[in-house]
Image 1 (spheres, rainbow, N blue to C red):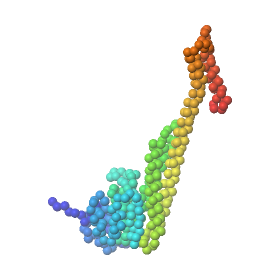
Image 2 (cartoon, rainbow, N blue to C red):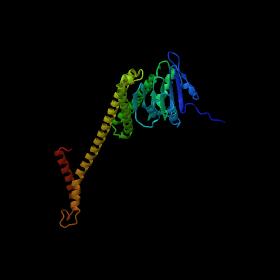
Image 3 (spheres, one colour):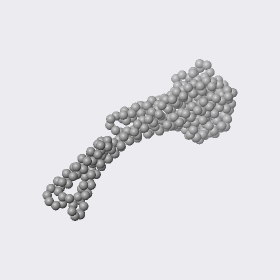
Image 4 (cartoon, rainbow, N blue to C red):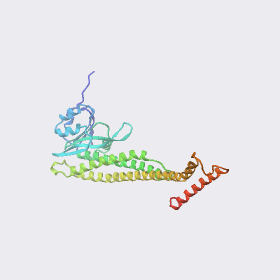
Length: 331
């Protein structure tokens, strides 16, 4: 039994988009190397970096510059967008996806787009890429060039961000209901993961937005066809969700301050009660300490009724402490 080595190692899927209204074709995973040579339309190759042969395949891919190969095979965890000689390549932020669920873990999508091909690589399954594939299966006629696929990838990331903002908003609503309830509760443990997630979302979103603005400002002769219009639309989308994420971050910060304020007030109330108890008990303690001395000539030591006089003196000392506290405005 012989094992057949695929022509495209690490291939997750491949689509051939044709010009006009003709639908795109999903190429088989065991396609031949000759299927990559298309004269009509463009290709989308999505590769899994877990296959160690991907780097060698990309190095031999036609019209793929070495910096783009490095961007497609890197394991760096930071976003980047580079435009050079009418091609665009780099790394985008995405969210990982399990086989049966979606997560909030950050993932990284590496991409290269030219006039004839768009190549994407990843290490873990990602949300946005799978959603774009589903959109292509539903309506492939809207993708006329590789930049259209790139725009949809970033747009799906923005839609994912909106979904996460809604989820985090619901979590903050529940925390707020407990925080502003009459019963004091410490919700900092529930709030801390939400704040951490919001901060990470805002940091990565601001990075992508800055990169898109910088890419949109390069010379027109460096841009692939259609990138200028796509970048303008994407910047508007990212700015809108950036405003929502920033507002959510501020809301979480204010809620944390409110929790700290309530806890501080509760602590001060407990200290106030303890201070009053100390103030009331200190004079009787002085009286009992005085009469507890083993010295001669103590008052009320001779005769009957000494204990009653001592208790009366303790009561008078408590009343005197109460009067002084009222006079000072503490009570």
